[in-house]
Image (cartoon, rainbow, N blue to C red; front, side):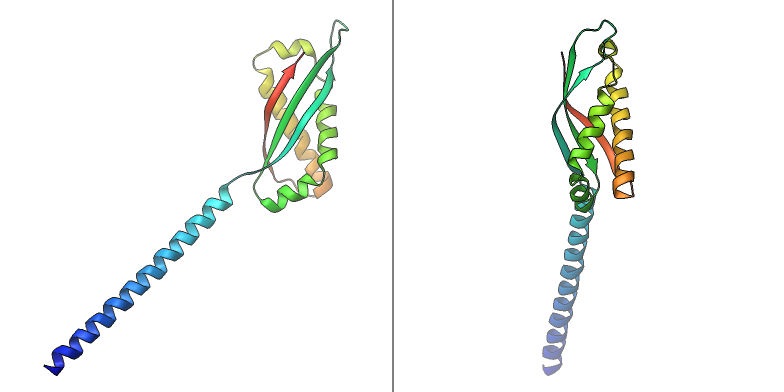
Length: 145
């Protein structure tokens, strides 16, 4: 009788230990999954209401108003890049003001502009932050007049 009782206590202890170990490892897996999800979420630096004059072959006055979202991989780099907000705006204003109004009719021009703006922002990041960690750039709003 005493042996069955000891065996029962040992069995319960083993089950509790196994359950505790499983719970520990499962919670660790959940934490790792949550951390990996957080690390792949993008961060953005937004530049709103950039207005530039467009060049025109016919010497007419045309404007481009746009908003841009710059994608980076970390919150730290987002904060660092955001400190250069005026420099980023200036670089994009310079880039877009060299564009021709007539070229804006081309459906593929938006992607060309986006890629050119991305390269300009990457150059600015490399110059001012001494490294380039800009993942992408999105033209979130673009009005041509």
